[in-house]
Image 1: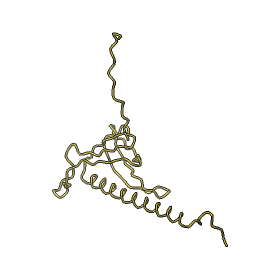
Image 2 (image 1 turned 60 degrees about the vertical axis):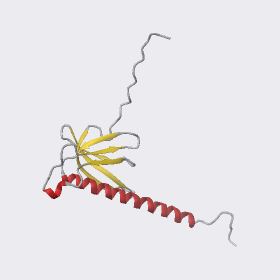
Image 3 (image 1 turned 135 degrees about the horizontal axis):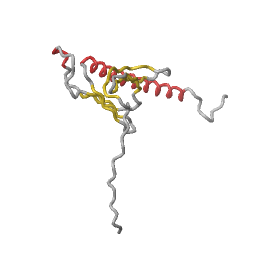
Image 4 (image 1 turned 180 degrees about the vertical axis):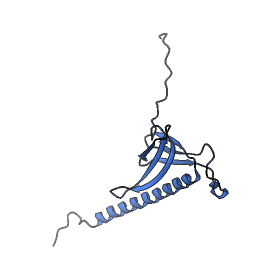
Length: 144
C-alpha cells in the first residue's frame, strides 16, 4: 500500500444543447426539405445576441411555468423561475429562461404541433414501407 492519496473523481462536464444561450426568444415548428418536422428555437445569450438552433431529434422538452397560464388575469410576464429545459438523447441539457405568457403559449403550441407532425410522419412512413412490401412478388413464384 502506498501513501499516495487518491484524487476525488469529478463528474464529467456536461455540454449544453444550446451553448451560451440563457433566454428563449421564440420557438417554431418547421418542415424541412424532406418533409420531416423539426423544432427550431431562437435564443438570446448574455449579451442579448439572438441565435437560431435546431432542437435535436428525440430531445425531451420540459416547460416549467404556472398552470393554468396567468393570461386570463391580464398578466404579460411569467413569474421568475419559469423556464424551458431541453435534454438531448446524449445527455446534454440546456435550461432557458421563459419570460412572457405569449412565449409560453407559443412554445406549448409548437411542442404540440411537433408531436402530432412527428407521429403523422412516422405513421405515413410505416404505411409506405408496408405497402412496398405487399407490392413485391413473392420469391420462388414465376410467371406461368
